[in-house]
Amino acid sequence: MRNTDTPHSYLGRFWLPSQSEETAVSGVLDFDEAGATVRLEGALTPTGLLADAIVFAKLQGRHEMATLFNCFASASRKGDGTVVSSKIESTRIALGTLRKDLGGRGVQFRLPGSPTWFHEQCFDADIGDQSSTVVRFKAFEVTRYPLPDRLALERFYSATVPFGNWGSEQFHVDRPMGFRILSPTRLPFERLWELMYRLRRFLEFLSQQHLPHTHLMVIDEADIERGVPDIEIRHSSLHAVKPRKFEWDEQLAQFDDIRDRFPALLMRWFEVHQAYPEAFERYFAAFDRDRKDIILHFLWNVAALEELHKLRTTRMTKKEFSLLERLQDIRARWAAAFKVMPSDDALRQIKDSRHYYAHAAGDLRDKAAKNWILLRYGDFIAALSNLEILALLGLSDEDAIGLARNYWMSETLCLEKYPAHERES
Image: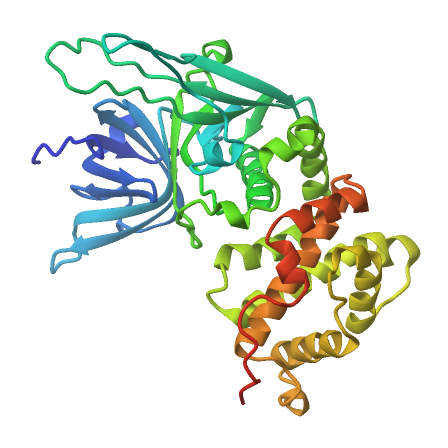
């Protein structure tokens, strides 16, 4: 077989955990951030087929071993049915381990875009005379935050400094920011993923920017004190979100505005995100799709706001509300946030629009909002959810309203965002 060993292609031998390594079949592993593909000279089963299986691999290259999860295989056969070759697709690959029970005592990752939100000075330049300039930075810097269940979050900068710069016209220092969530005990990978995901959602909420994770790694048998993970993870997703340019004007809160309260807000977020998943799942279902479908944007946001309102009403008092009553109650609570109070007619149109689009209520077709008006209502509902979440995190209503007045939410809450075209059929 041709040697195709590149940074993303390894020669290797592959076998099933239920069999011994002596049964391994030669093949080539190709992988990227979205998973892995294995091409075998033969197959791991008599039929060449696999479904939701785990595969072990011994590799030639930087990674000496790997475990492939969620594997599905197809095969090519001769006329007599003999398997000639097979192809395995895996949605998750763990490079550096041969364990079915993937897990560890920590997870490390990056969230591109988040350093912009933290907006910290990473380099300091002392420009002297024409012959001397001094650039100062810390090669390693870490800030530690406590999390529930004896967990800890480390936010760190780690610099890579080049050497041997004679004859070079450039000097480049890479100092990326990373995150590490540590546990005193070994946790399954699903739990580590959940923790990573929860932190990502917290920063996405505050920044109102998409922050997809990269460089996902697990600390299992490695020494935590050294800070070098021993397992790299490549994982595919049905709803991959691509990073985009950081928009300063779209932030809900800037880090400098909440720096002193950040640890408490972080702790509270981990508690409420775990306790009330329905509200946050609906909120981020709309957030992730970024207004690509204005009807779903509107419906997901309405569903999120309903769940958030239930947390402080129905679940506590058992009192039931119609959607219109919920909107009126939320309007009354946040009255000080509105420069112009939303009218009853606007709230009724939001109610009618939800019923029309969610339940195909044909009698409400002419009353339902469409196009720009529907998009305006979707953002308005999302802004109300932001206020409810800020209060859920422990901010006073006054503090939450203060944030709403400082940024884009003020225009959104006044129902002045987007052009006010006439409703179209």
